[in-house]
Length: 134
Image (cartoon, rainbow, N blue to C red):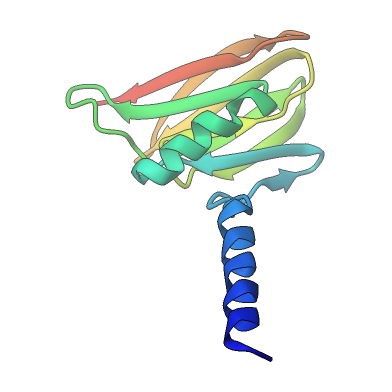
């Protein structure tokens, strides 16, 4: 094999590597039949949340009320009627979930301080809830 062939092959592999889509930093998880992801820490994850948001129907964003600093480690439970459809601990300030149309109840807890919300997911669009703690 000549040096020219080796260099050409190396350039082709380098071009393919640069053209390949980057790996997603946030893994999608499943609870029952609900697919969700959570994150948003750092610029890369923040951009990934923005890029992937259109695939989901429900979004929660959490922050401190006074400072506006984002929160992680919030425990989230979503129910529909008497059935728990999602239970998770948030890995960052944002959680996205694929919920079917219907009326749900959210219970979110941070540092043993709960918040409850009722919300309805429609056939199109996304429902966004913003939760603030003192």
